[in-house]
Image 1 (tube, one colour):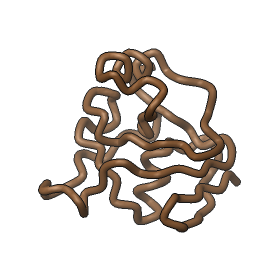
Image 2: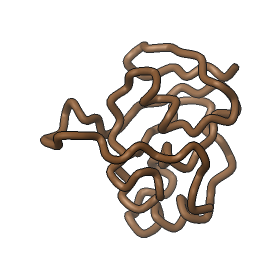
Image 3: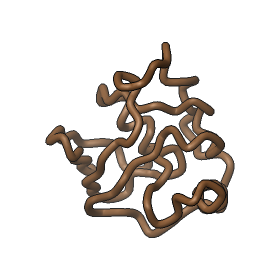
Image 4: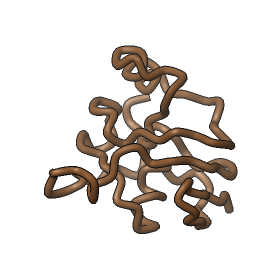
Length: 112
């Protein structure tokens, strides 16, 4: 099982193939995902310290390019947990003025 280590020191195992945004949320991390995991809003951004996946969906690449974030951050809604990762969550519900994180993303990544 892949191991996720957060910059804050939290460590947890996740099922291989699970969407990163869901793995984080299910582990109790209050990550934002305002668009419901469709690569539209960029609120589920993470910054990799180690273990960044090489694979990137077209939707993620396009959105990051549009926002000037390509090479600086990744969208956790577009990543599956395949290996160990060390990362920082950029936007959390607890540090926002929002009432909820957003609709829960589906188990499968969309769009590709």
